[in-house]
Length: 343
Image (cartoon, rainbow, N blue to C red):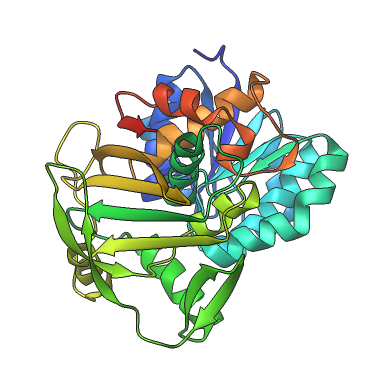
């Protein structure tokens, strides 16, 4: 448990932000509620007596500095991250505190690594982007599956989602990413990110039981294509998504997620199947759980807890698998996520 350390949460009133605030409180941290909408912040503060609300827009550096004052770390939950990551990271660097975000946006994560690696290292601080279901979890699973391998030929991340009711933030981020890509889709192949216009294939993926073989959309590239190659020597990283989830995500009338338990989680379940291959050998790591937005909270908060405790393996900007002991980190996520590693 944390000893009352203050952690600022930017975008605290958002869907994922609320899970992060609750997880921080459960872990003994003191969240400071930060975001641009003062009314929403105050309403959230009233539902969490004793918590402070500090309004701050990303285009107001002075307000951001006030919002991060006295904080030991900041978690950015406000997308689109292509707009919020840079100003919040800049504020974290000015405050001299670690920064963690839950960005699933490929381009935003690429920018974070490109623009802040040297500065964060020189400042002696830590920045961990994509510390969430997309990006962080896949990276941790791939790293754990690799074990003692120093390289692999390919990594495959198959997302078995029962469905996907996207939040407003997910839709907004998707719109921004689509505009930046000019409608193209992303592929990590031959050791680099490439942009393509060709149709993505529909394939079959043999998920572990009880899910079994399902139809998936191939080259459904997520933030894992940024986080995994940052530290693992794997020239091919490919992702897949169950077609049911793709249909939900792309349908304009799919409603936002609704709570089915007292934790605020939706009924959505997931199975993430990660396979790494080298020559004729294959290793696998599998994670299961409920609600992809909810489980981003324990991922981000566990990262902050380890950074503040000095349980890190890198300095500057690093992805989850590089920054932390992957297998130990995954085990610490129970009961939120169940993990099996097969080597």
